[in-house]
Image 1 (spheres, one colour):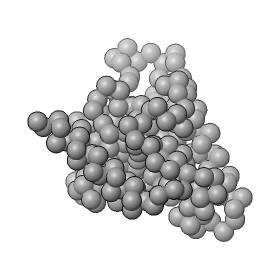
Image 2 (cartoon, rainbow, N blue to C red):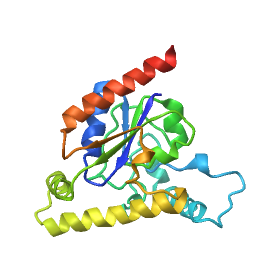
Image 3 (cartoon, rainbow, N blue to C red):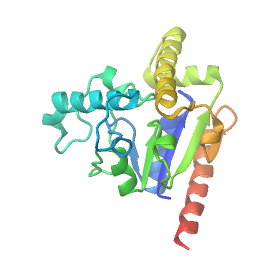
Image 4 (cartoon, rainbow, N blue to C red):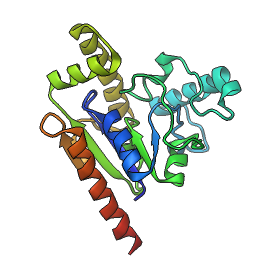
Length: 219
């Protein structure tokens, strides 16, 4: 196991935990990069399913609008409406923990390893591949407060709208493609309620478990 996926509820602290874990583990950190689900599309390119049609649209959009900036810069500009279905808990483009990290697909993340993958449905995209799957949960009030603070929102209603909009996209993706819901705790190897314990404590717990798994797999 050299990939840690973080999913769960919007505003439960995935970005904060992901950044801390990446620094602690000296891992790459991936949140807002337009990764393609190449591993789940076969060579037939059957576009009759929601999954195939959705990702064909993404691939065409990325190729048409961003290919000029893609070379040498994985965080190329893609309109927000396109990125929202791909990542549901981000305040904007971020830098990778490792400067030369240039994955172009979910497969690339797992092939490279040593990566924290945040709010990219990694818990289900991993398939049979080895990953430590972390699910974060929190009370509604704490989630709203976190989004307000992180994104500089002045209105509770704005934060609530933002969360609900992202949750809708997140649930549609999880259920439409994988037939599951992101708040199903059975999807995760470990789940944490960040209303009951801090991100700092949670990061220590997850890092310890990740290191144990990595040692186990090398013995």
